[in-house]
Image (cartoon, rainbow, N blue to C red):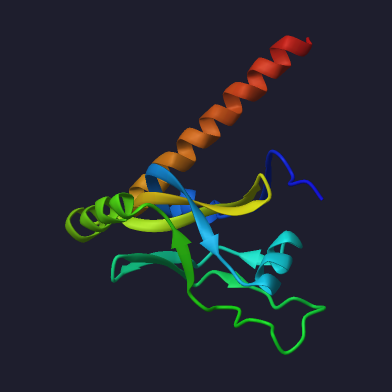
Length: 156
């Protein structure tokens, strides 16, 4: 069976864009077990409360909930076990320096299939204050109003 080509989105962390300013994004692989891959392909993954930690030169995704596979047996996995992320050592060192010194957080933004392999988009994020959240909500509403006015003008 040939590998699938292209990108197929599986899950997205929309709350991250509300809670944080996303400075940079990185693509990294996920080290998963067989039943976890099957559950993710079925869309049984939740990224809402997840974050990433760097330990001993390795990066792990914590709090990422992957539901147990329904047709699985005794080999099903723990839904909240830490998942190892696959990145180059130089990138991990760079991220470790930024997180420790400048107050950034590593947040999983989305999980997708790319050419048959499970990938995770990792965001280097800085937390928003309450007034920042209000500003971004006001900007979003203004953009929506502009789009509505533009579409009304195009129609009539």
